Image 1: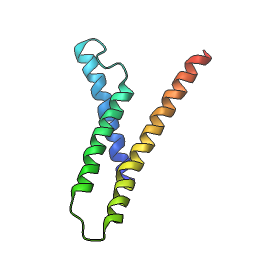
Image 2: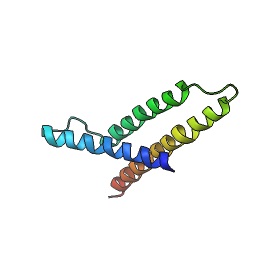
Image 3: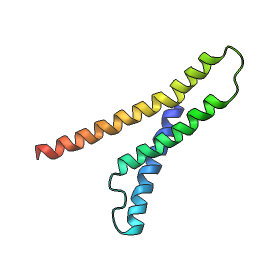
Image 4: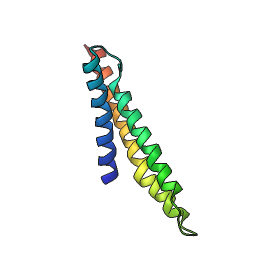
Length: 98
């Protein structure tokens, strides 16, 4: 649960950083802020996954490392990607009905 909240915070930091950059420049440098948020999440998750893999574990503790990688990195990222894709699909579907 904590990892999911952490990655949601990273997503919103990337999302609003893209919005702030667009406001500061006065034009749309980054057109899709959702993708910018996902890029931030993927960059942090790659660093987080590398840190989990690169730390030395005791002999025979490989399944613990795989569990940590899956539960604390892969699962939250997949949930966020699915949520962003669902919201984009809902928004597009709402525009089609109008």
